[in-house]
Amino acid sequence: MGARKFLSCDLKQNALGVIRVLEVLMNAIVIDAQTRELKVFAASVTLAGGGLVLRKAVEVGQLADLTKEGPLEVPRDGEQAGVVIVMGDYRAQSSAGFTRRVGSEKFGENFVVGGVGFTYPVFSEDGSRKEVGACLRPFRDIVPVTIVRANAVRKVATHANSNPETAAAAMVGLGLRPGLIVAEGQSDYTSAWQVEGASEVGEIPAEHRGDIFTPERLVGVAAGKKYRAANLKAWASEGWLEPIDRAPSKMTEALTALLGQELLRQTATSLLEESPVVETPVEG
Image 1 (cartoon, helix red, strand yellow):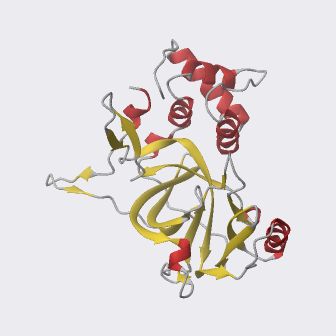
Image 2 (cartoon, rainbow, N blue to C red):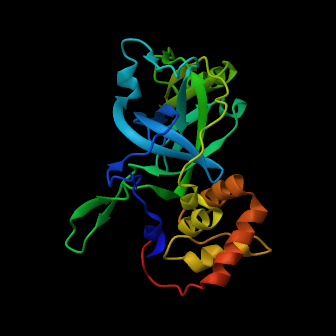
């Protein structure tokens, strides 16, 4: 079954047999910086396996559109400022396009390890496409994020001319500004948004299905199917070999930052001992 055996819908049956969604105590506005579209959605947030679990609630729009007429106000969390999560970074392989979380080091790095509502496509033999993976599950690609409390997200005025040197200078200047900034651009321009009033988020509520996000499950899902044994052997190796799967350096870096190198090695070793895997040409 591979990763699919870890899927679990976020529902629970009460004594009367009524299915209800479990209560979650923290909500956030999430800016998805994994693409230059900078899509914004609302989600609930919990903590499990050393990382965040996001339950996607509703798409809000693209950040550029939401801030055309003024700042995007972040709904307050009772007496505290609301929560903003900037999810991932992006660098194009065939161009100079990018997104970047400028100033993220001031708030520490977290990771999204799983969630609800994050579908991905699968294709049948006849070419038809189906979206799957909407239930609660660990992510194979653990995503670095910055989570803060903030009041609003406001567009920052940058240069109007198309010029690589000016675009580079804009990035230098953005790095001198306080707080957290979301930057997006190309070789000849830089756009930016200030996350206003950014501060440490404080305590995050615990995930009630933490059993889905144990180190064994996180590492098992990350290892994939096609090169599962090779990846596990690489992480278990005393010489710390490089996995042969797609984007191996990024995958190893995220797992190491989340779990620590020793726990990653121990977990991979344990998974190999429990169920050695014969390589098969199955896409993971």
